[in-house]
Image (tube, rainbow, N blue to C red):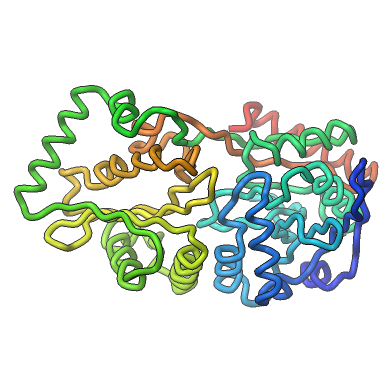
Length: 388
């Protein structure tokens, strides 16, 4: 019941404002208190003014995930307010194990279909948010030895704000894992970027594959926003992904009721919020490659892709990613996160920029707790000094 105790505790932190005229407050609340029309409206307003976008912590996605994966309300939300207005948000839980070790700790909550763990924080309040969060963690650590932040961007204003607060408090922290995943960020046109990314030989091979695919029937690509025919598109995507290796090993979305529910609810929420873009490569009217993007200006996230493995010789996944480069021509989008694992065999050869993502562990509590954490993190980094 430890996590429930967090959710019910009426504990507030009034962080020093450092020149800000408004009062600052951070408390832990049940996520269900945010699942109301009024709360979602304030949440959406926060997303619109966030220092950097994270669709996985917006209302339409995070609530879908919590409803699917946390029916017993074990996950809590750290709610940060400035002047009475919602100004920051991060889901939190209290794991009893740190990977394979029985070490209780506080941790930001991520799940296998959450590809960024950065909190939503109002622009300009990054340092105030981290000061309030760390103060709350110090005072409410319970049995937790440290704070662990997963899937954190290791660049940008939210990360910079955290580093500044860690330095001013002389608080021990370590990046215990780091990876660089593919990212699309360029002033080049889609065609110029494609030519710069792939050799002439590879581009010629893709043209040959497309021509051979066209010999099998009518080939066309569609790009869609909104919710038109979305229910059918979702069912096609789930079936397409499940028909391949992910279905065989049980990692497809449709392999589990919870992930199926989350995916359907999240995509409808994204479409309603104007966040969804869908690409489909069709052969004689049947989808053979599909991709869902989340549009969160000035960024975007290439969320999920699937292709029909019966047509693998024609590289349908690469063909749909070739079309996805058209995002470079969208004036409101400056970059797109691939959401792919580092060293991905396909996307890494097309998208040339990289975004550093990592896991951070941070000291909390009093002197003895921090000393124990120091010994732990020293041992962890000794085994893995590069944090990879």
